[in-house]
Length: 155
Ligand SMILES: [Zn+2]
Image 1 (cartoon, rainbow, N blue to C red):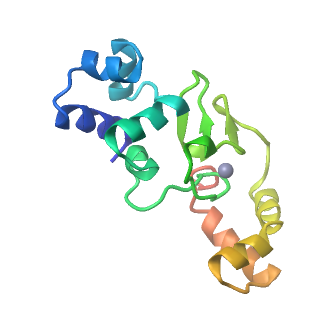
Image 2: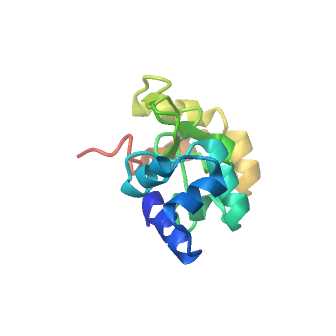
């Protein structure tokens, strides 16, 4: 499910009109309508409010069944503050704050450069995952994994 579908369904399930939803979230009815049309996404503060108001996790709001990851660097998106931003100030539902700001990538990197940048966090990765990958092993895994992400996927 996409974010616009999640938001539309959430509003209807709670029996709210677009006006009532807008009042709850301190936005205009037009804003709610734009989210539901998929023209814009709520900004990070509004997502936080939605999450509190309706007891929704970040994954549920982003329409991800399990967990969302940044489609550029592969970092898990677990906190609202980790989300990047679109040009209109809405939250990015695909990219993290380090990779994507105001609708554009923060760094002009090649896939190879992104892999090397990720390898700097190998120790942290190993200790958080309980793995013991060498740099070569990790490079191979990253090469396969990152190539599946939206930014690097070849058409
Ligand atoms: Zn990222």
